[in-house]
Image (cartoon, rainbow, N blue to C red; front, side, top):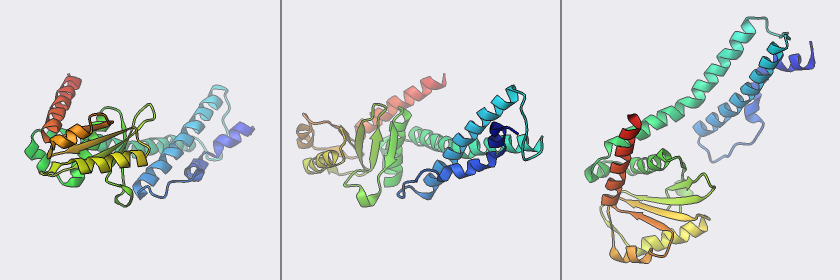
Length: 230
């Protein structure tokens, strides 16, 4: 048995790959599990390439007898891929459903604060941005972090309420934007925004959406989703 054949025969060691790098402690356990599965899947792909190389060169020698070895190896890969991709597909379906159900300002009022945050996160994700929910213990008034493909960080504050958003709230958001090292801030509310607040952000990288603005934004998203289906 050659060295490469020996390495390939030890493919069950892929399940140790998830522990080779530290995992952020602030991640929820489901997030840590998915990260572990992702690392194992990458290791499986590496072993798969090695197996293809050995197959092309006519080398085959395994600790587990064939065809059981191949069946177990392929079965593990399929299970890992399904488990790793299932949360992404489920979240994508949930986001699409949430966006399609939000057609009028009354629909937004029926959402819980958590669901409203999910809706705003779904909007950014739909356009290819990565989002991160901010824990309440360290939010500083921010509900979501958004990361662009260019490496920029944006902060988003979501307010599902009927009251008006005034200048003091935007001052706090502006300070938080600098504290978090973000290049832009968004305030998304189902309520209204005072004229003084609009005037104060004119020369600042802060984007405002009131309730009516959000509905117009969602209508554009609905039209784009209908075009994508055709």
